[in-house]
Length: 302
Image 1 (cartoon, helix red, strand yellow):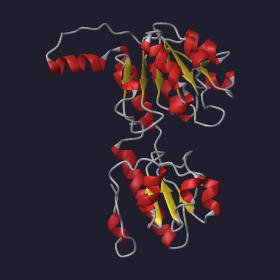
Image 2 (cartoon, rainbow, N blue to C red):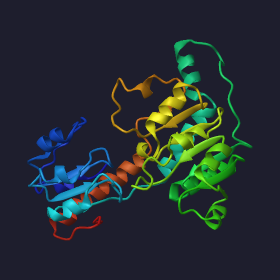
Image 3 (cartoon, helix red, strand yellow):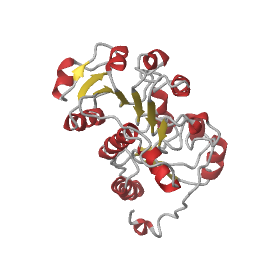
Image 4 (cartoon, rainbow, N blue to C red):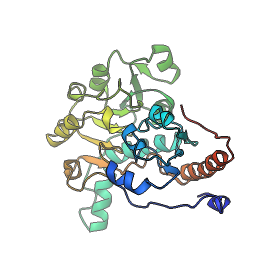
């Protein structure tokens, strides 16, 4: 994906292809490295880890935002943190893959096809005329809204700072509250950045406002949605189904109860995983390393 040969003679590169697990394992694996490159928020870098890596001088993350890095702790330790470009289009596209997969039962029918199972065993739901509720109408949510309009859907939107004017500019109607949006939508899709304010935003009360035939989609961050409440709603068929690309623990443990839910469509955090995104990530990672070695860091996060 990138010209790593440009670093020959200046940097010895080691690649970790397996998930490293908890902080102790990460600290042990990375103890001797001056430069570390991480993929999105897959490997958290809190203050406690940074303090255990005294040799670390440069930390490069894919994307220009990474909530799992303690930037203040990095600054105190003299660690420069740099980022890369990251396209929003890939998450928008996966969101629609999940929505379409849900309402047309794609995974169920595909599994039956390959297993020699029943032919045409489910009945899908039209998107045209249905209502899409968007929790968050930023760069990703507004693009999701544009696609919804092409399908002939009605779009509602809500977030803590969203105004009617901004909603209207994106072709959406501002809902009066989160419960109002949940109750009025056939499909709800989550597109807010994880922060202290948005953590647990879609809570048990919000999920309880969904109609029995409604779907919930989350390609943002797992912590925005109350995971226990979502699990309970799916187990008891209080909603028609859900699709998620993000989880509280990644990789998701093999015995996690989410894995046993037939009304859950799940993908292993693929929102950003496209060839174009990876090419941008690693090309700019090499550039970040070269600039750091030259004493002129670029794309520095603060």
